[in-house]
Each structure stands twice: as C-alpha cells, then as structure tokens.
Image 1 (spheres, rainbow, N blue to C red):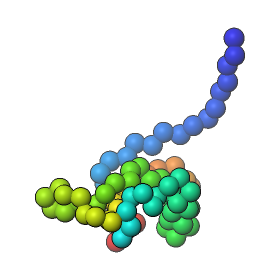
Image 2: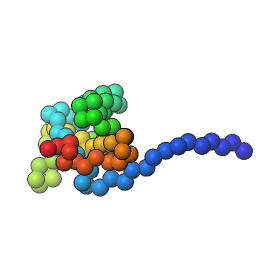
Image 3: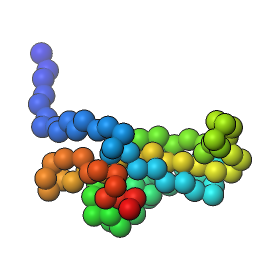
Length: 92
C-alpha cells in the first residue's frame, strides 16, 4: 500500500475577503501564463499572496456581459499571520 503525507493550510474566506479587479481585455486574454503573471504581480504589489478565484466577463447592472471587459475575483493571504486579508486593505 502506498501512502504519503503533506502539510497544508486551509483558509476560509468570505465576501469580506473578495477583491475584484476589472480589465479592458476579453477573458480569453487570461490564459494560464497570464493568470500566473497577474497573480505574481498582484502578490508583489500588495505584499500578500494573491489567489485568483474566478475569471469572468464583466457585467452591467442588468447582468449583461460587457464586450471586451473582464473581472478577476481574487483573495489575498497574509502568509506571516496565516490568515486571509480583508478586501478593504487591498482596494482602499
């Protein structure tokens, strides 16, 4: 029987941790390499580890997709204190 062990951390996030970023590019621009690049840039800029949870078309107030616009839903982790970062610290 094969077995292995790994340490992992689980973080529970809520709406209070959700930070949205909007781009004037279509979602198709965000391939795996661009997502990783964006994550790394955001992590460096904000000083917390960035996780991109969802990439979707930006919508208007009626829920209609806006052509050529993308919203990234993210949350950030403070690795020093091992806790999610409140979005208000990111999008002030």
